[in-house]
Image 1 (tube, rainbow, N blue to C red):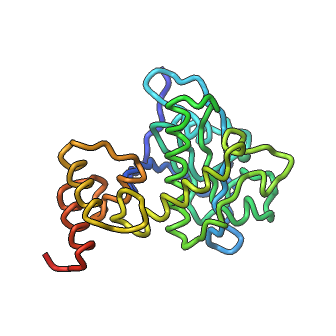
Image 2: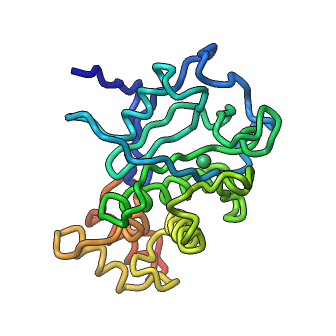
Length: 249
Ligand SMILES: [Zn+2]
């Protein structure tokens, strides 16, 4: 039986669980260089294909493990994400090899890479992986103070490569989804996504908290005002305060 990769740390951001297993410094499987300006300036989206999964694991773990075992042919990316798992392999401040533009090109040199593992079938798993990838992209843009124009495709850096192959046909839609997540992160409370925080949002949150409503992922991000990675009655209370313009209880 395969020995699966063990994360060094597990963190959850905006409901997204991320398993960290950073390639050690000096590893032959990463560039061991900081990003050119010592901070991320772009987020690059890639697609890589769904692979057959060994029992008990998933695609993201298999890609992460292959990277750690030197089986990725020199490719190193910051994040692999699929419909259930997300693994981080590089610090957000160091370079990976993913954009085919060398050590000084802007793709490798200035961006954080996300490999979204898909098969393009449009199946539930496929769209779920894409949706989770959009949230991760929004989290990274937000963390590093980057605007949506800093969201790039692999093809933007290297036109000969049609990547992300499964997302490029509807790139504008994906981009809007990332914008929606970024807005939900930056302006929480607007659960019904109509552009304003009202008592309707508080009601929706309360219904979700007691199990009467199934929110979409972007709605959960917007509803989780206290950022404890769940939608609870406290969030509904905070949203109600927000929409009636009061800060105290
Ligand atoms: Zn790519």
